[in-house]
Length: 615
Image (cartoon, rainbow, N blue to C red; front, side, top):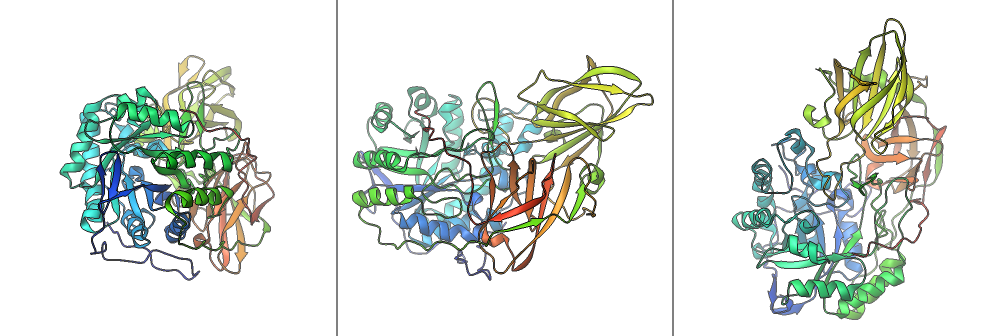
């Protein structure tokens, strides 16, 4: 376990400086006095911005923090993504992009206070709300409640996490001034015994800074998520006067703190891109600061759901996977852009806290546009034994039962024939299955169409049935968090279950075993292209004419694409590029396009001006 920050790289971008530990100089603590926060004994208004270290390449942490500081912020806030740090039970990772301590120290070095929100549940439109997929391997375990198996896993995680955070608290000379207990729990349940367990656990492990809860600005949310004696805060995007009234009703004394001011919103595949009027959002911020409230701007900088880590929602009727970009229409854009909202917010903050003394950071360079074809390909179905180890099971099992959390999973059986046309149905599909008979694609089944089936006719001698299932992101909000992936029920021909399966997990964390050739295979395939650049800089990859899949740049998983939109380009940050030749691998699940495009501007889709939720 390492907390050493990355060293500077040859491209010259600003980076965290390595330190052996927090500054020995004492830092003022954030405390409550009456209806106000104090810092160093003086009244203090927290003006913070959310930025998640796990959505930003570590080489760019300092750059993004400098931009937020220049907007006038005195604090930054980050969630902690449990599933990144403990991808397998008992195996912990705090190196490189997971070096939470280095991120916190970097913020402190820039004079920023830090608020940490360790969950264990974080929502955040992140895979499973940050909960590790391996929790779902035990069908008896129940999430986010006083259930012994779940509490044991959380306690073991906090036993590792808190020793990372405790030395970085203000009382020890570090920048952490507040830690949140759970996250918007009132939106999920009312097991206050569970919240008290977390609260006591934080105190017992050395948390001595301000502790607080955060819940929506509704009576039911506040009633379910508050802990007596712990500072309560609110999360909302609009109608600030009524929202603060709700908070004051449940907390008659104490500071008014908006733990999340939603000035923008996130996007789902197949739905419009959200853009909120900058002037209107700035008016709400002005109202909040004018009321004396402390505010955390969610998001200050959104970043990117790299790899397979996007979350998903479910509105009761439909499963809604979130796109790769987490730009969030934030004041600091996904690639560090200083947007109109940045300048409006900077002006508002300056009126209330005084003008920012920090200059505006320069615009980061962009790569020149180019278009290249793919020169080699490899069939996914033909590469199964290179990418995975087969598991033999009587019936299909979900990813979690085989120790897998992310990616794809492949199921294969041999159907008996001859068989007149029968209807193939998958029970408990999550989330999307491509179905093949003897290598020929029959169609796609989707969890949003659970009654749908495909017609299958089996020739004499039988046929091989393949199902390639994609985890499109575990649900991160609401009552359906136990979102097991793959196939949780069974596969039927009419009413007859099919048994005797080969199952191959495909997390696709290492593609080096692939054997590329000049032919373009039918069906799902990996396609390789080479992009040559003079010097690393930010770029945006587009795949016109392609359908759905995943992109890797020099072995790093950038994220998913889908022609449903709204997102068109994938952000490819400068630290991932190399001078000279760069390898781009695309896993296309359906129909490949003719070429890839490197662009110098992002395209996240047309904004529809949809307002953020009112609650």
